[in-house]
Length: 458
Image (tube, rainbow, N blue to C red; front, side, top):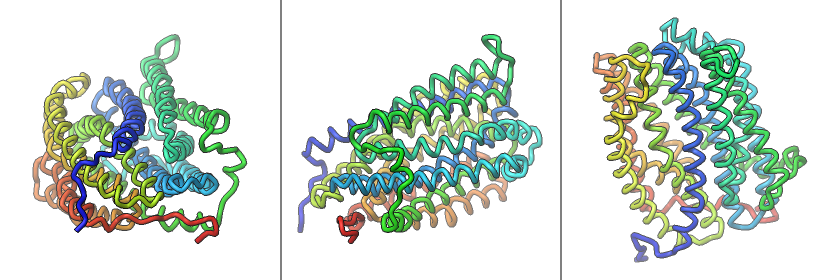
């Protein structure tokens, strides 16, 4: 029987992990800071304002999840072709991904611009929260197309191991977003005080700047992928078929996850604005904790795709064992850190009521436990299994947990009159249960599949 070490001695794995993870983690941290700045500044306007923006932001979550599906397809396919050294196929894959992203962004923008009240009414019946959310959504929806294009281009660069540009672009966005938030929300530097309207306008302007900077880099400065504007108009019938074949389960998984996120909002929304605001605070802490894990998990995904594309299966098994140990340790450390800082973090929201702060403490306590599972299963199922080519398994697994475990248990708990924190725990319970599935799947090593074609298209 083949002996596989628990910890790989291949130094290039750790070197690549750090080189790829740090820029991605910093980009995620900066992206988080942009949302956090919005959250804090809008939070100063009161519970109804922060609840309205949180509900409206669930549409941005949908955009991020769908865009993440497209990014995932670009990354998984392109990273394997990168292992083979096939740049032509990567350029075609990127073009196909951008086409799908932009079409989705346009359709969702049109829907949100035409019927914002009807959309937000799906999440809550509180008229004050809906009114604030509509004011925010009508403007911020114009940013969706720019966001989708930027993220697709960042994914393209990551697939060829250029991760720093995403960090730089997000850093530029942070500077503009925070400055414009401060200026437009509170009426500084001679500008009128625009409140929620100003927060949305600041986000839109920052998204446009992101896209412009990313396009300038890709077309003028990059020397690795060497993408030209004309490449975005080209496609490939065979690769488009592959993109749909492997991309649809990824997008489907993201859609399922968006159903989960929106289900979270609907279920918690029926408790009223205090619980909605508390969920917003707790989920912001979760996003902060997710930064490092997501950066490392993305790095593992790139390494996985490149290694399998190059046909180095024995080495990939070593990497898989090492990844499990690293991310379990990271989860334990992060959960402990969240427990230490939760009181301080909630205290940053000076405009919320005492009742909201109590709920936020309870929700954050739940996250301290479930995040241990999040680190392990997300790295295993997304960084290894999905990037390794077994995309359908992850989609099926997510669908089963969301539709048969998470949402039904939360709905039942809510119906039985359970406390909000119990319902919140039901909404996060899959993060622990998925660890069992991930352990057996990873160590079966039946998830490594080469998805590339040779020059003849075979």
